[in-house]
Image (cartoon, rainbow, N blue to C red; front, side):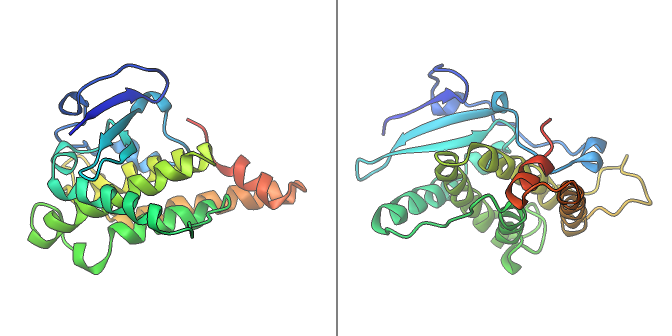
Length: 217
């Protein structure tokens, strides 16, 4: 199996085993200040993998992706199945710059009832979550071919939600702040919609307001 990767901003080729995914994505208090916006290109590796049938599959992989998800065999199965499914179908999802639709899709995909517990306490989550992460990353990789900003915003949101689902509440987390992926996801979406409304009140078009509402780090 041929496998290599390049940075999202260059042509540095590395082995799949050398991709610098973290052992665990650490939750910090900066999570509380998260706003919907694109991930830094320097935080992405582009993985190219030759699948069993000979096809070459590309995948955008955030370096913050937890290593235990990246190394899970079902992570590979998720993006490979997505890649093969897209080749068999002429119908592709059309996100058409709808930011809230995309981030809600990412959240709902990761919080299906089968993953209602944390990764380290639910055996079904340990088997299912990596598959869905792989599937979503292939979705976002394909989206990046036509809408770079939207795809990178989706990658950032996936990196925001994942540790909230897979790690216990940190000891330093403020007692008055909820530690729940759904609450923090909804908070980020509400703040984004408020920014869009503000730009609409400035007579910006809906598409332009959506773009301006995405906060670039």
